[in-house]
Length: 276
Image 1 (cartoon, rainbow, N blue to C red):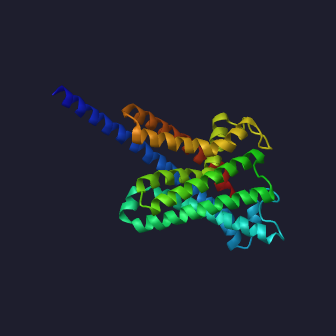
Image 2: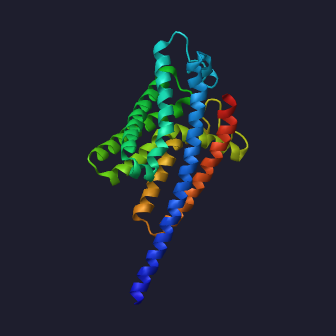
Image 3: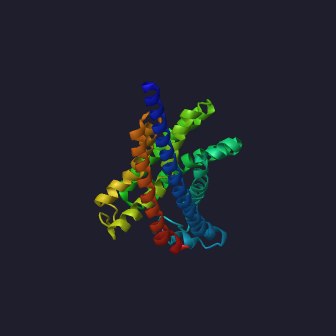
């Protein structure tokens, strides 16, 4: 009887830990969806309207000389335009892949949106590196090194997610797809991280105009490795952790959502909306 009672108590605690962790993940998803779709509005409003309205100088409101629209450089402008379009596609469609309800109710939509997300994200990673190497680094050489690391990891994780989905190993596929999701959106995490840091410190502490300050160097790699590390901790806690590990992970996910929310608010009010 005592053993059965202890087993029942453990099951109740495990259920509560799972519920708290799932609630934290849903909140994280809501913040991500709001922030990514705001970013999509910014991309479409700044760069898309420039194409539609024939005002290509809009591309140069943010991008420095030589990195935006360059008169006479048809090939470079085309690569940049395709890269921006792909960024818009993955920003809009990526968060939909994390909705279990959509996967159950409309598996075809989930499947084709996932194929689009992975293929476009992988091509965008390669074109992003090409732009950085051909036109120079926008945010310094450290950021270029971080972007090369990011592109490499995107290709690896994207290929693994695709391979396991094709083999119908869906549990393994979802793990790799989650890794690919945070890696493909790493540039978005970079903006949130920088704006949240500036908001907390009320200024650009650790940042230089050459993007070689201590915080710049950390963020050049941190915008890739911190979200990816968070995914690995979440998967470990969800799949192999006890009640304490899952509750601790829930606290970590909530803290991440709060920092992301601060970054979204700071980026939207300080960067995105004023430039539209």
